[in-house]
Length: 375
Ligand SMILES: [Zn+2]
Ligand SMILES: [Zn+2]
Image 1 (cartoon, rainbow, N blue to C red):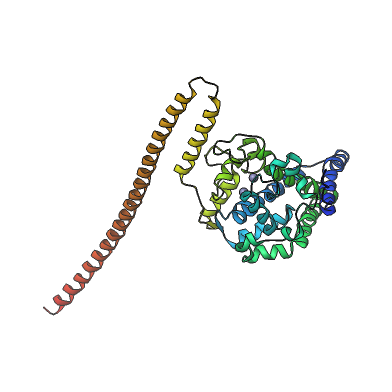
Image 2 (spheres, rainbow, N blue to C red):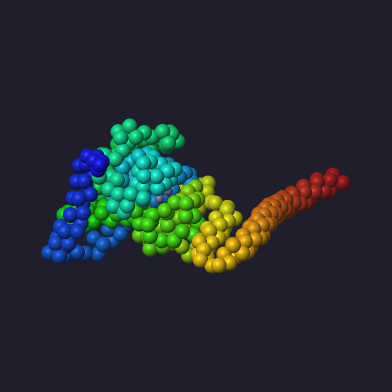
């Protein structure tokens, strides 16, 4: 017997359908007949990037995973950008996302389980009442966020904030550039559709398309094309195994502007306590995954047992060398740090010595002059 689908969430259906219609039908017709300027494109890029970064750096890496700490001013900006991106409040988004990580691919518990197919994980999960009312507003997995004033303020005033950002910003730009309809279409609709679907790709495509260098215990993939579209979130295989890391792309050549933003803000003292997975843990996960992948590939060989035994031996040797190497590296780093501290202390001491020497000489001179006066 076919189970009946839960009823539609009409507000969501309306938002997704109308913004899509405005972006792909009305906007092109309008711009073909009225012309398009550099300002339209520039502000599309600026607002699209702003919203997506507020979701990736704010909603995702800060609030859902606590991978770093941020100054209130930055959190305030993230809260505004999140409302602009129209992806529900940070509290709600983080709660869903924490469940997604905890029960990834579990069709009954993961709110956007990739095992239910592309459509469901991309957008379908938001179109119907799949969650019961109690589950929907259960934020018990976000008690830390419930203590945060900015998060709770955004949650309480989410609707007016979302309206203010989504209508206010395009209207303001429309007044400045004297094209209210054009800006409403470009910054209101086109930007929103781009924000929505690039973010949704992480739940859908990033669980379907790409490589699995760190783990195949879940469906998450690393995909550099998606990383470009999503400001670095495409390295989703790494992210699902090391979710507490503020980076998703760990190599310098990987495109992760969210990581660059968080790091740059740390130099400006706007972020701190950036969490990173120890390099040996990452290397070990990678080696184990490679071993498992290769073992699968040689199943057809007649001497597979011998080959597997050899592989395991090499793997064990690799892990022991790796452990030794990283231990030594840690020691070296700590002695380097100590050396630097000692060098610094030495420099401070030297400076004080020079100062003292000068003071003493002066005092001595004064003393001798006084004595000479009465000699
Ligand atoms: Zn995540
Ligand atoms: Zn995921």
